[in-house]
Image: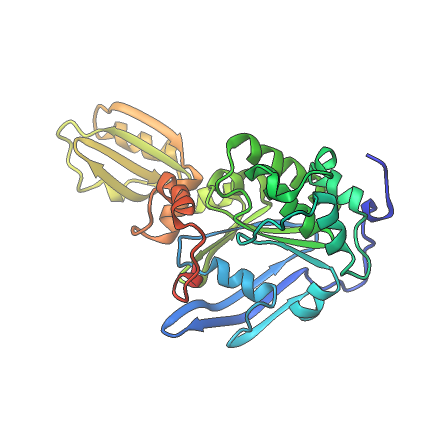
Length: 333
């Protein structure tokens, strides 16, 4: 790739404010508390994933960040300034779920048109290359596949040469190949020292691409850690075995055990010390069908958001069945 001025690392400044800062931020829609006292800092250069069930407050958090909604209480600052000012200056780009193809315009024409609205835009050829669209610049945007159209939205979000890009479920409804291609482009953008905040229904994406994962539940942050940290906090390992008539009364008292699940004649123990748990089980008698596995991020998510959460597979599928609906109540997700 040809080096351009916008690809160079952004200079460090003295006393640099966070890229994103929420302070005691709250937003309600009627009786629905979409965001309830959120405190959050995202440092420059970080990639942060936003997770939560539908109704957790993800989309409202993004709307507040972009200045599309005003908080009822607290504050939101981007690079030390208001969201509206940061967006207008091109420091922030956004790729939202909504969006229609513009008829008759080519990909290059659309990106160039948007770039002209910013004071210091990214060169159009660079935005197309970064989004994986170099060979599609002359194609009409209303004649693209779903994956190609999503990459066009990414190029449009890059047009202002932003330091922060905000992505609301960027790979929803994309096939595996298109998802992989999108994240290749996103990693190239992040490697320049830029900041990324994305919401997703794919827990594997959060685990693979985020430096930190912020879990929202009922408008509050219930966890903020790496994927590995979330797994440890929720009970780092699972110990499963056949009960074979064994009493279940003392399972919760075993060392390291934080949760017990019984399904038929099989027990599953969530434990923070699997070695100690297994030793204690063996001391209590023979153990049949023993399995020790690391807790998945799906299981950590369920533990953090309560027993009412759906399974990881259902959680991901929910993104596709929702069809982007955004009523007042649903905006609290």
